[in-house]
Length: 384
Ligand SMILES: Cc1cc2nc3c(=O)[nH]c(=O)nc-3n(C[C@H](O)[C@H](O)[C@H](O)COP(=O)(O)OP(=O)(O)OC[C@H]3O[C@@H](n4cnc5c(N)ncnc54)[C@H](O)[C@@H]3O)c2cc1C
Image 1 (cartoon, protein in one colour):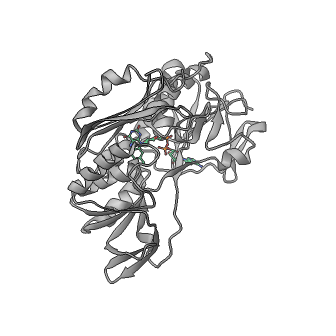
Image 2: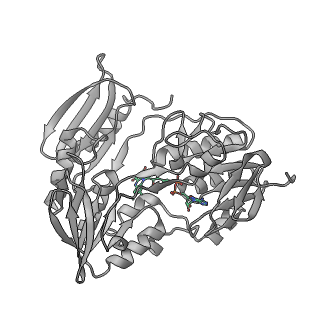
Image 3: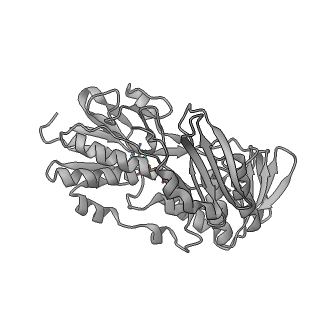
C-alpha cells in the first residue's frame, strides 16, 4: 500500500457525507476519496416523501453539488462510479478494471429497493423512490398525470400516500397486510393513521398483491390477486428496502441482514467499517437518520485514532403523515410488554410497559404527539 493512501468512503448519502464532515473536523490532512454510483449531490433523503406538498422538484431538494462538497470536505469525489469489488487482503477496491488503494475503507452504500415480481407490459411505469435521481424520474413521469397506485403500506408508503394526495393525486394503496405499518405500529394507532389518510381520499386495498400491470390506451390497469382491476396512470413501489451486502459477502466480510459491524463500526475485517442503512450494528439494522448520525460521530473518532463505541439512546421516529401526526418508538427486540390504548379517534396514546411498569415503547397519534418529550425520558436506550 502506498503511504499516502486515502480514507475511502463508498456512498455519498447522509451516512457517507456526515461521516466525512465529522472526520474532517478531526483530521484536516489525510487524503479523502468518496465514490458514489449516483450524481453525488448532497440532499436529505427524508425530504423525498414531502416533495409534492412542499412543491420541490429534485433540484429544489438538492443542497449542494458534488464540486462544492469536494471543496468543503477537502476530498476527491468520483460520481456515477460504481465500486465493483473489494480486496481486503491488498487494501484496495475495484472500479471495473481500475483498482484504488485505501488506508481505511468505509461502506456507506445504503440499501436497495425490493422489487416485487409483477407481470405485464407496463413494468416501466413502476417507480421506486429511494434517491434523488429516482425522485426526479418519478416527478417527470407524474407531470400531467392524476392517479397513482402505491405498492406498500409501510412507513414510506404512508408518507408518500399523504404527500402525493396533498400534491393533488388520487391514491390507491395496495399491500398484502391487514393494517398500515405492520410490525411497527399497534393496530389502534395504525387504524388512526389509515382513517386520516382515507379522509384525504386515499383508498386502501389491504390483503391482495399486484399481479399484473397492463397498458390500456393512455392509462394503466392494475390487476390485483383478489380479482380487482384498478385504473391508474403510474405506480410507486414502496415495498421495502434491503441493505446492500453482496459486495461485502463476496469479499469475505461477515454479513447477516446487513454488513455486520461491532460497536466501533468495524466489520469482520480490519480497516473496513460500515454505517448507515447497509450496516448491522451489534445486531441492529435501523434504516433511519438518527442512528447513522450517532455512528458518524463515533466512527470519525475511531478513524482519527481514538477507538469509540457507538451508543444509541431511545430513537423515536416521527412519521411524516401530517393528516394524522404520528411518533412511534417500537419496543426493543425481544422485549415482552403489555399494550394499553388511551384516547379516542385520531388522538391516541398507545403505551407498551413491562410487568414492572417500565415504558418499553409507544405510538402517539394526533394531539397525543405532544407528549413525546416527556415519554422519551422514560424510554430505554437501544444500545446503552
Ligand atoms: C422516502 C424516504 C423517507 C425517509 N424519511 C425518513 C425520516 O423521516 N426519518 C428518518 O430518520 N429516516 C427516514 N428515511 C430513511 C433515511 O433517509 C435513510 O436511513 C438514510 O438516508 C440512509 O442513508 P445512507 O447514506 O445509509 O444510504 P443512501 O442515502 O441510500 O446512500 C447510499 C450511497 O451509496 C451509493 N452506492 C451504492 N452502491 C454503490 C456502489 N457499489 N458503488 C458506489 N456507490 C454506491 C449510492 O449511490 C449512494 O450515494 C427515509 C427514507 C426514504 C426512502
